[in-house]
Length: 414
Image (tube, rainbow, N blue to C red; front, side):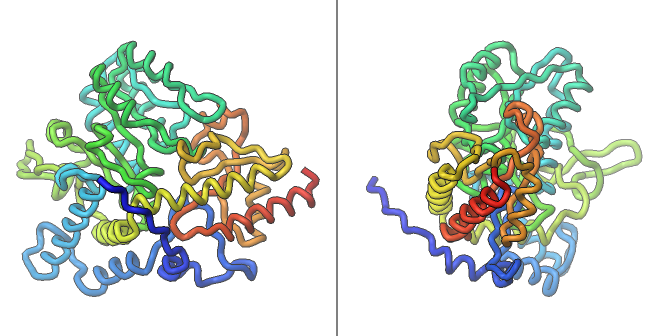
């Protein structure tokens, strides 16, 4: 098949959809480089949520009146959009609050029934706390063991360690697709395939990949996959857990209450079909509708185009930033193996101080341990500064960041 040439995205046109960029910070156009933490929202997402609240606000599934049916249709239509976005079936898509809740759901509903004393769970040292703590709690409860794949100094996983661990009786593996600190894009398809050949189930934390590149759960082959809406132009308080149908059907519920039941009697109950078995109570209806609008927005751009735009920005930023004297950039410099995240330190400056100074220049970055303290320990630092990019970022903003870092270096003699 002939490859269609990629058309660069129109960033200036995209920026007009984001009202937050209409303001100035410190007298400068707002430069937002904290997209790994959360993204901004376009008018289309804000409007979709406002329309729900203003025009058809009602609870879903149980309402037998027109607006309730309209709300139900919009909610389930968003589920279908998300399912198509990751190449899943709608019944395999569960709406949760965020990636954190999705991982906890799996640890609780699958893990508590399947992990036994002495079992081993495999993680990596680059995991977000959200993909460590649930497994720590489960391992403590079940007297299981956690194992961790180390990284090379360039931020890439030690694949020989991965294969060694898998061959030593691992029961379950949970790993990040793209590191929120290093930007490392892990070879998840290869790892899932190898794990499955050894009878190991796999959960993928896609919080930093689903918003930034095409994600296909059938191509990856994973058993579970989790991501958050607020990192991909959607609202906060809505996220997604994908699970293979047969696994979800055999798992017990995570939370008990309304809508997750089929029948309730005084001393027993039966559960609803998937995915509703895992969506107890009144859900975040507006959030799901907003996430559906975000998926529409990203689909209109094209996820391959999103990926290429960020790759170009990352390459440009790395080339510029590596020329700054005294800077230490973490992770591989190969943009084919990393996402649009650059963590760095400047001399002996504390990253919090650096972020505060840049804020005075109208630049928003993140500073700290990024909810990845074990990785900070591995890197031998207390924290890093982090710039992360998305569809509305430009080379001009990177130039301004680099110029500001140079000013900081000169003023503070680092």
